[in-house]
Length: 497
Image 1: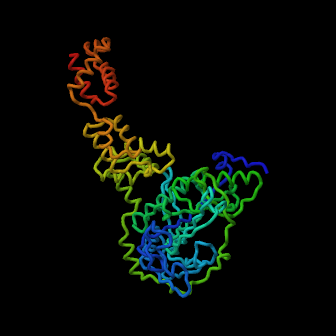
Image 2 (image 1 turned 180 degrees about the vertical axis):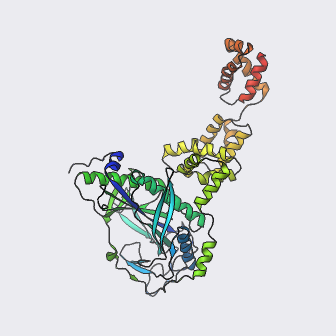
Image 3 (image 1 turned 30 degrees about the vertical axis):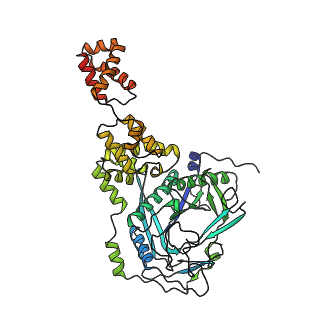
């Protein structure tokens, strides 16, 4: 079979309409697991956070975690959902090594939260993402495949299972299908997960660390010709970064378009995103609800939240990110376009933390949206992972404000910060990068520049003060950019007056 040639992205969105949907799994930050008293802290030795309940041993009985139920209700309220006055758990039956009971306690036809929405900003437009449901379940264990080159089961010599994660409270947030977004489908997916992560963080219900798996996203994608019924969807599983969410949608749109162009039917299946190549690989055919043989969980009573309790939880919700950003925009004095640039860079929280660490909004924006954004883009990482902290950026700008660094030297210091050499003041001292403002030391360099450029010096003596800039440049070159430019200019004018 000949290789499928991928069309261009512009060609795909001209001929096809994408429909996406996102299923986001969030590990709640409770002290204990969903149905037992085992601790939930991350990073313990394998199989040291387990008990008969989360190991599914015979005779053990689950008890629902009230803190997890409360957190789920708060998530539903923040997402404008209706909170059910009665719901129950169900058993989702399937065999897999990381499910010790061979079933997962989840919710099926009677979830706790339904019919909500979340508004997100995409290229200056507000897109309302419908929320189908928010329901509770328990997380699975974690399989580790060793002895192979890919970390996957194919080619591995053995597989190990760590049940520490089994039973950790998990909330699944499922969107309604999102049609009508065309070429913005990948960006919309990323904007939604970004906004959802910010909402969850503001609620304090999860640390939402995608790199540790406490926030994981399954991305559903389909294509159809304009006017036709929606196409067959695929589900890209466990995408674990914001950038990869966007890339996964784009990759599936290109792949599906190429298959449809070749007359090949799309198969409903799960797929896995490949970080190194940016494409997806097939997993397994997608089961239907019937395959899971759902039935009500017999060992747990239904949940009937007291309306007064729900009302109290709603009244106590914190300021949500969208409102918070509007307040920051006003405080920082930014235009809508400037604020959109901050949002597009994923820099709102970083700038806010940098300002809190002791610098101005303008100073913080300069570094996060300039040098650091450039480095993040070149490295293909999120801005928060570029290697500098808000405290370090605030310190760097303070050194500039105090005249100890100029912008050129500050960029050099920032290189050291990103490389892990230490904080800005330490790097400045270690590399000898401070601004030289001592008039005695600079006078020698000024006299040398005047002597080496007699024609320019003559113009300055004739009153053409703009020509002094060339002499300032000569001194800056001699001093490797460390001279204080204002002091140098003053000395030049004084010597040539």
